[in-house]
Image (tube, rainbow, N blue to C red):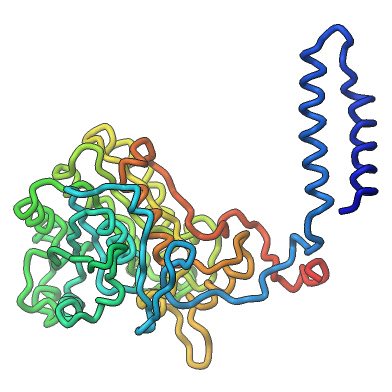
Length: 400
């Protein structure tokens, strides 16, 4: 910080090198190496002494952003006209996906990661088609028709993302024989057919031939608010079926119609490997299955079709689906607690936006990642790396 401190550092450093790294008089290369190392150490030491005195253990005092919107570091934030403000993506300027077809399973509104990935892919030029859960299909289609998602559809060039086609998709059914009568006769499925994974894959092949990108943005646990000790077998298996095996089935059926060099992408969560109270009902187990299956499928699909398989472990986002978990009167929702915890404890004390995941997903689906497969990519401001909650009461004296 001062000339005196710098001089003291220099003397200490020279003394260290004088004792330990005294060069041979007959070896000039040793002298050069020593001088380079000495200068490097001096610079590092000076940087250390000149650093801020703020404790490295101090948690962020701010709470997390509970609204999905675009990162200001990527684009100037546009004014939000809805609870979920729009995303604007820019990484696609260096990626050209024109002529590529992307099928995104699990898009039903504009607030989640599936939408953000779709938009990032569209911004890079890909043709976007989606699969939507039948009970919300009509609502989603009506919203698209009325322009309800227009504010969240603006691409970097000012145009709007176009979803070329929406297919009804219930990913817990592999083939028509799997659909029980109670579903066939359910009024929410009235007038719909061809919504099993096998049927949708055939319909996509008939409409587009081959596809290049397959995105699994699906998860459901009917007992997600229950601790594992209180989760029934039916609830546990339902979570695994909808959230993990659905990815396996998607690749089974879509793999044969994917072009070589294509990529399948799914979304996972840190609960797969760390305890997240409130994320129950077998959902943590399902996410662990999904990550394990990603590695196995990367090998099998890579050898069979030349297709890559990756997953993103995304940080918490207040999407509509996540907002429905554990909502109690007078309390924050589970996802709001998760966002606040992440902001207080992650290495990067900043908001996580849905387009952060969208851009990462677009990268993994692009030729830039042609050698990347079997990977769980953490997009969570580094929270996965932490082993201690720095905002804990037990750390309070160290945080002062």
